Image (cartoon, rainbow, N blue to C red; front, side, top):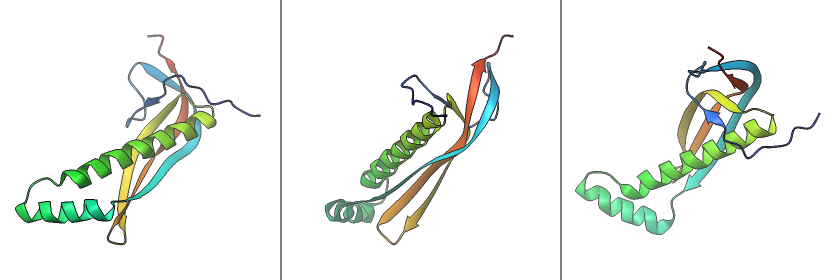
Length: 117
């Protein structure tokens, strides 16, 4: 049975039971993985900025964009499975080498409905 991906909004939550909804069916695990590397110019700018201390905006932007991209991939995987939600969503990240960052967004694809109470 093939399920068509939908463009309707998909609820992503870190809870097991979203308030105001009932989980009708758990479809299985879904994840989105992204590995990114900052370019040489960005690494040089970040290194120079780190000399003065404080936030390194080049890396903050990289991590934010990477997380967003990982969530987008996870959501698309949930849609392909026929879900309209991802419950128990989490992030994991690690460094690969000295210049690459891996971010994984994962959770359980589910079918949810608004509660009647």
